[in-house]
Image (tube, one colour):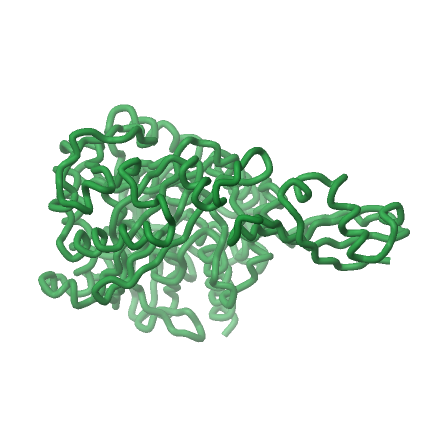
Length: 519
């Protein structure tokens, strides 16, 4: 017999099978000796009170041997001679689109401007060590996309866009830990994700797909209302029956290319702000009500949101036990992001704290049309770069000094490897952003006692939360309204916001391509 049981227990009890098996038995009303095994199917933390609890769901096996848990084998087929589909971008949207194409019997040809995950490492080292940004290979561009080296969080609310479980199973099939299948907020870790990405690449190549690294799309070849192919930076023409455009939120040249060719794009709301970094121990003490974390609780995270002067101010991509990393895609801009290793064992906790940017904020940039937000983003990043010393040294300020509007005579220790420079961020950031942040931080301190502290730094600028441009598509077929065989996809097109949602959107676009080819 198999029973599904839900259990609420302490962190210590949840950490040990010897301790939670008797609790499951008591809940089921049977002796613990009758349980032949347990499969935990869901796990979450409830830290709303001082009495911290762990919620477990388990499948208990009574009087029968537990069945071995297996991840479904994806039905990949050899597509070497099948219909070619071009996929621009090898981030999660592009990679999941390619794998779904292989399942459907289409040959994916991925065009990626950056390098594979192994070769990217050298360029990331150069940013940290030499403060030099390779515009084609950095924290945003390259195999796996922006998420590969800047965290690997897998939580999403976009559950209506596809099967979250399916995406997680594919990741586990390619080497991710099985814990992501049960945790409420799954996370792979930036130290583990590159290997998973490499194995996904191997699956694509083994089944007849192609991936062309160090290849930038510079032009679209149009014949009437259809694309016949693309032209690369070397002048080569690559043909395909359809094109899935999955270039990510930082491929500004792609947005500009579409704009030049009068292919419809739209400005969309986005958000910008700063990274805030606290000692992880401080966040643990706040969130766990002073309870020592020990070995049984993970590094604590937080989520904050306020309405300030008609705009949302909120935490974004919170990284417990993590690092702040340089995420610029050009040498004359300063962009920061956050990442956490799988153990989340660094001494610091960082999060983006960002302010919503609405169309009315972009009126001074109206001459740029749909690219108004992109230009606004670019100018802020350049101003912050200048404030930091015109390299990847980041301008920073103590959190309390930022709110008070005074320069910081010293800064706290920080995880950001290129280094910090004290700067008056309350003056460097555009007024609509700075004013709202300065009002929001003390309010956050009221919600999380101890959050508003001089022990925290703010570091500029967190500006790539999402794309400032949307590439429209038909709701039912996912085709661009002007170009029949162009399928805008993922975060860069405005339809995703993280690894899982981008993966689901990539799969949907692959399915839409198949439907279009059959029509």
